[in-house]
Amino acid sequence: MAATFKRMGWEDREVKVRRDELLSVLRQNREQHVRDYQAACVGYREVALRRIEESFQEAREVVHRLKEGQTVAVGFRISLSVPMSYERAYDQIIRMMEMSVDAEIVLTASQFACFVMDDWEWKEDWASSNAPYIRGGG
Image (cartoon, rainbow, N blue to C red; front, side, top):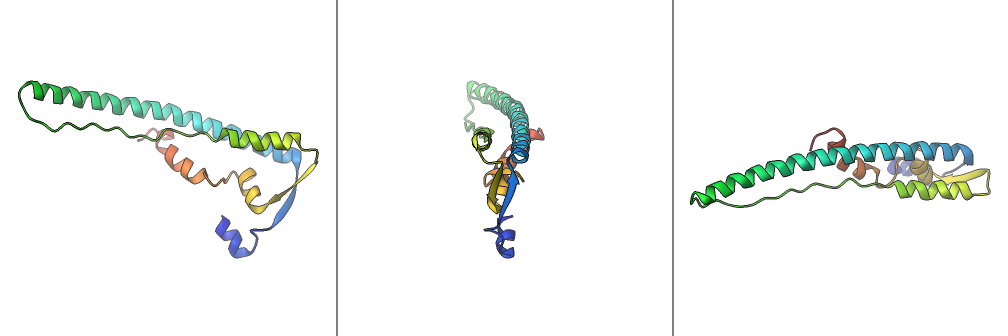
């Protein structure tokens, strides 16, 4: 989005918004983020448990072969990204808007993208790392 705005010459564009409307959108975005994070945590635990169980089974098979006198390669690795929450980022801007004495807030194009469109700089990486857990894959 930033590249599009830059091409359009709008990266420095500002907009004045009503604080109460901005707070409403921020709270909705935060609630959705928390729901997505919680879903990712559930999916992560399911994937982690499944992978650990598979590794335990593989380890039992290796132990059995070693006890039989076989020489087998031993190597176990489970690598999963833990879901991240950016709830505090939402909390901070929500609290700032709650404490503001202004009825109207001026936002830059990049602030508008984050606060209103929920398009934060971390959002794409966050979504792609959590997607396998939310879909139940992994």
